[in-house]
Image (cartoon, one colour):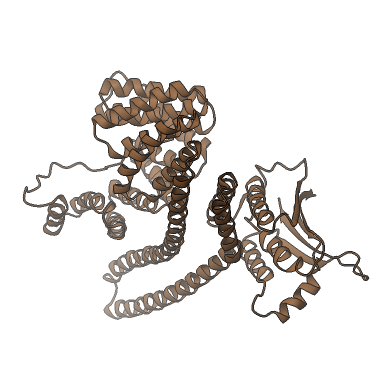
Length: 601
C-alpha cells in the first residue's frame, strides 16, 4: 500500500531566477551576496531541497549549517526548517527512528510559534507507518483530519491538497490494521476530492491502493477494475513509477486467478519499464511473479532462467545492503561528531561575547583554556568514535556470520540447484521460497536488538526445516511454546539460540549413530522467559575435545553469545543469562547438551 507524501517547504520567495542559471546557482549566488542572516536562513532551505536528491552529504551539511545559523539569530521558523530538513535526510537514508526524533522536535517548536501542524503530522504518521507502528500512524493522520475538516468549504489550495493526501493515508492506516471497510471508505473519499481538484497523480495512487485492498478481500473483479483505472490515469500523466506499479499489480492479480499468459504479458512490460529506473527490489519482485507465471504455464525452461536471474540479483542486493549498513554506521558517527562540534562552536561564541566585558588578561586566559578544552575534546571524540566504530563493525560481522554460516548457504543453494537439474520445480520453488524468507528475516532481525517471540519462532522453523532437508531428514526437531505465553507480545533477542543449534548439527551429531533430535522450548517461570535447547548429540564435553583437535573449524557460539549478552545487559537492571551443560550419563547410555537462556519479561 502506498501513502501520499507531502513535502514541507517552509519559506516561499518571489526570487526571480536568471534564465541562464540553474536554481541552485541562483540561490547560491544570492546567499553569497547578502548580509542579511534571516534571508540566508531562508535561502538555505531552498538550497537544501536542491541538494536532497543529488548529494545527500551536502544536504546534511546544509541542514546542520541552517540550524546553527538559525540558533545564532534566534529565528524559530528557520530552526524548525533545519530540524525538518535533517529529519528528511535520515528518512532518505532509511533511519526512521532518527528522523522521528527530529520531526517530534519540530512539532514542539511548531506548537509554540503557531505553525500549521498538518504537514508535520503527515510526515510523522508516515515515519510511524515505516516503523510498523500503525496505531501511532493512524493517531497522527486523524489529527490532520480534525485540523482540516472544519475548513472544507472555505479551504485554501494547500488545505484541499492536504485533505486529498490525508484521506488516502487514512485508508492505508486502516488497511494496515486490517479494518478493510473503513479503509475503502477513506480511499473513496480521497477519490472524490481528487476528482474535484483534478489531481490525477493522487487518483492513480489511490485507485492502486483500492485495487490492493480488494485483492486482499479476494474480490478480484473489483480489484482488476481499480488497477486498470490506476494504469489508465498513470498513462495519461506519463507517471513511469505509477505505470510500473499498476502493471505489476495487474500481473500479480492475473497470476492469482490463473490467467498466467495475461499475467506474463503485463509483467514483461513492467520489467522493461523498471529496468531503466534501476530499482533492484522492484525488479526482484517482478522476477518472482514471472517465475510464478512460467510455473503456471509449465514452462520450466524459462522458469529456470528467471530463477537464476532472481538468485543472482538477490545475492547482489544482499551484498549492497550490508555495505550500505556499514556505511550508514560510519556516517551516523560522523554526524554525531559534527553536531557536537556545532554545539561546542555555539558555546564558544557565547563565551567570547562575555570575555569582551572583562580585562584583557582574563580574556586571554579564558580563551587559551577554551582552546585547550576544544582540542582535547575533539581528540577524545575522534578516539572514542574510532573505537566505537571498530567495535560495532566487528560485533555486527560476528553476529551475521553466526546466523549466516557460509557452509549452510552453499549447501542450501546446491540443494536448490540439484532440484532444478532433477526437474523437481515444486521442490526447488518451495526450498527457494523458504531460503529467501529465512534470509530476509535474518537481514531484518540483524538491525534490531529485540523481535517478537512469534517472529523468532518463525525464523527458527525456516532454519530447521532447511537443515532437515539438507541432511536428508536425518534430523528431527520440536519447538514447544507454553500456552500462557503471548508470542506476539513477548520480545526476545533475534536468533539467540541459532548458534547452539548449529553447534549441535555441525559438532554434536558428528560421530553419533542415531538420528539427531533437537528440542527448543519457551516457557515462563515467574517473571522470566526460559528458553531451552536440548539435543541428543555427543555432549558438549566430547564436542569440545574434538573441536580442540580439529583447529580448522572452531565454534564461536559461546564467545559471540557472551558479547551479545554483555551489550544487551548494559542498561538493564535485570540481566539476561545463559548456561550450557553436558547431560550425558556416566555409562554414555544418554548423551546430549542443554543450553538455557533466562530473559526478563
